[in-house]
Amino acid sequence: EVQLVQSGPEVKKSGESLKISCKASGYTFTSNWIAWVRQMPGKGLEWMATIYPGDSDTKYSPSFQGQVTISADKSISTAYLQWRSLKATDTAMYYCARLDSRGFQYWGQGTLVAVSS
Amino acid sequence: SNGVTQPPSVSVSPGQTASIPCSGDTLENTNACWFQQKPGQSPVMVIYQNNRRPSGIPERFSGSKSGNTATLTISGTQAIDEAAYYCQTWGSNTDVVFGGGTKLTVL
Image (cartoon, rainbow over all chains, first blue to last red; front, side, top):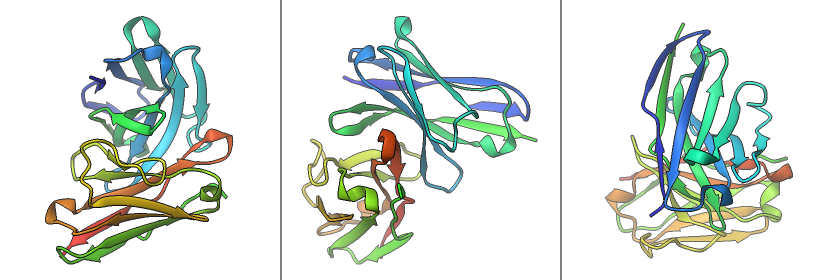
């Protein structure tokens, strides 16, 4: 059974760094792209970035290029999303999702990030 | 343009048919997926490749696409179908594109 289990909620201050994770199981981690999707409070879904763990190829939304870093560790089947310096506007729920031939069929449970100014 | 547009809200009476459109130039050449999201939950795929239904999704959910518009149709809408619905497709450079979402209210 395919599962994506995300790290727990985070409460941070502006300017702090953060790395959240998405641990995959039930399939070959290196064979599928993984995406990160942001959902700000009361708003819609926004694609941020995608990574292919097989060769670490990455794609970023122009809206998020330079603001976050996506990465993956094949040895532990885990994808990451990282910020160097958080802003209050980064407060949101963040989802990881696996891309397959059907699309984004499998999603993580979400990681809530709260950033205070 | 890469963007796709959905109406912010749609209302339907129980047992009636709800239709949610998603329009954008990029849909002329790409497939559409649809996701259902209930409050406090992760999105759930209800339609992929324009009109295919994942296992476990009720038959009352169907999808279609014509030209630059994809449509999600829910026949015999039930109260449990009240949720936000998002279309998703692909833009240039294989960028992922989400619609803004449609809040379906079952009155």
